[in-house]
Image (cartoon, rainbow, N blue to C red; front, top):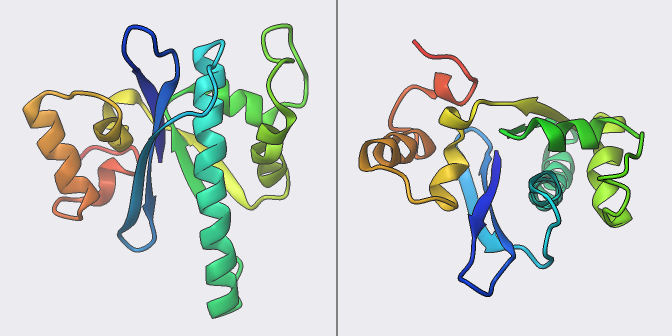
Length: 159
């Protein structure tokens, strides 16, 4: 689960990324300022996706060593452009400048190590790490992240 949004102060143009890692419950989360200035929201989201995939790959390798089982990580994003960029090898005028090292995400998708899924913004739990949310929404996200309420929201279903 990842999210990129908030810009820094008046002179700061770098975005913030946030991600939450689940494995039978929350095992980690991260919120950090991106290292580069993104030229579009799609690029900033793709930067965040790349960072999240690095964490996912580490967990994949750890679990593979311990259990000898191969698992596919599901990564939720609320940005359809970044998902399309990771799933499509065609370069467009607006995306051809993106650093090739970020296409690490694309190789994980092609090798079926990760599955990218869209999740609506209102269900994006990582917003808690990148935005000032209203109290009730923050409370709901905190309860979900720490397993205090039904996990159906994570899967994009409301009861």
